[in-house]
Length: 227
Length: 72
Image (cartoon, rainbow over all chains, first blue to last red; front, side, top):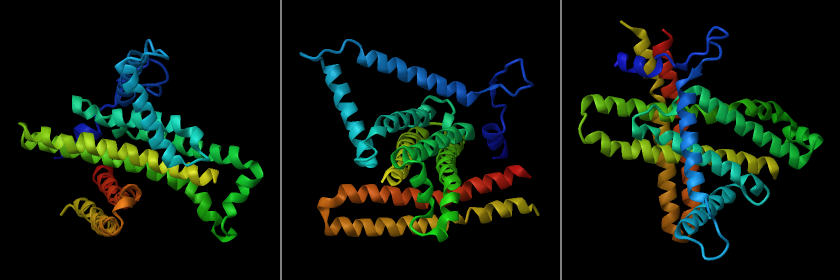
């Protein structure tokens, strides 16, 4: 049991050693895996979107267009009318986290199991939320927004700036870590057939749900900020 | 006796709260869908959000338990 955890959590995370700065600039495994995920996604996008036409479209183009409309509808519906301009960013994050969570299907460790990746994602989210609020309301109104609905809870509102990204990143990290640990345990106990059935739940369903929840909460915060 | 294991076990008790919370949320959502089957899309969305928030406490417990095991 302890060896398993050690293998998962305490392994040497550095994948590419940079011979400068005493290990400070080492590239983590999660970063390299997420680069691979990004590369595959970009190749997929380039393949799917080449040679688009206005008239007499191919089946591939129709499928891609309906998928884009669907995912824009999903994220735009969560953001509301005021924040609809951020729907493409949310769709990108949704697809990226979804792909990252499902890397476990191919035997690799999901990048979202590393705290650095989830912290980066949640920092991007909170910066976007506050920037959206600033852009919509202007500096003065944004500062006044901390004293809403009454000045007594202003400390709470300021604390929320830290709590929101913390809870976002811990939720994603903990869920993916838990799913991976359980899958590793099952692979130890029963290596045949059984893991395949459970990975449908732990890798595909749970990964998709967590990506959706991450995007949903970020959209909710944006919606609240631009109202 | 190794007390760190006990600490981790106590941290895992957060699962109780999460279980009760998700159970309550699902019960109410089922109720609401039975009353108004046409609003199931909105109810589903809210249920997912509520479940995610309730589940987060259990996840925090899990993370804390792992931290306890590994920080000693």
